[in-house]
Length: 365
Image (cartoon, rainbow, N blue to C red; front, side, top):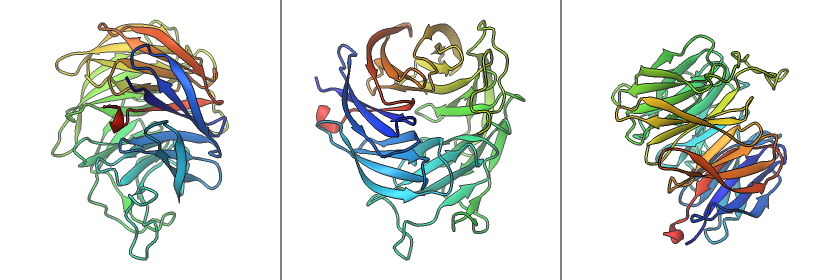
């Protein structure tokens, strides 16, 4: 059986690592390393064979990496300079436009993908960049599965906003030469919670949000027509860990310090039976079962790599992968029928791994 390829953004090493995941055993093997990507922090994958990387070294840019379906090797092919740092990347469902979030600049942006798949402007340039009034410390930018709205989590404002994807109104943006979009609506998170990452269910009816500062996971019902979110549940991923709420981080205080909540990634398995969320202070992954109505039940907690900012799921849903910013390693876990995580493989990476994407090329089917 052909392997699944695993890609890691390694900010400290300035590289994207490619590993192979054995779909039967979960063993990991290093395949290749794409260097020259200083401070690469975020990835998003076009399953047709392109990986987009957010690079925060000067100049700030998004790099399109073409993927070899036989070896998984990632080769830089096109570049787009961007006006702000990147902490999150996603693709519009048609895979022609990128959405990015910038934590330090407090904005969300959209722009055509670099290279042939993009939509050039009338003068043949890369086209305009649209900036969105998404709020301070914007940490994620995620389109709905139906492609009608894009959602941004503002950690600094404790707010989640949604924007119609096709309607961009407002005046020209001074930093981008494009437009400035305002939200169609927003929902307030709990004060001081710091909403960070969000994930949609496949049908777009539920949204799951991790909160960096308090460690809660919020479950929302989503109205497909208006984009509006309604809170269904708030559940803790850190109960019993003895942690205090964490601060809002800044360039002057990149590490919140010991003894405080520092949650990061959240992922929903392809079969939508389980949700997993990471906590960096204790280097743990919390597992939740998803009920028929989308609500969560806490299952257990698993110790993992040191400071796990990123986790990923292979397309089969049989394996979870976790990387540690401070460990320089990635571990694969078999996902049990009860959501249990059993370690299967481990491999070294370039320094500072913090984002994971998994790809099973079409030739593997």
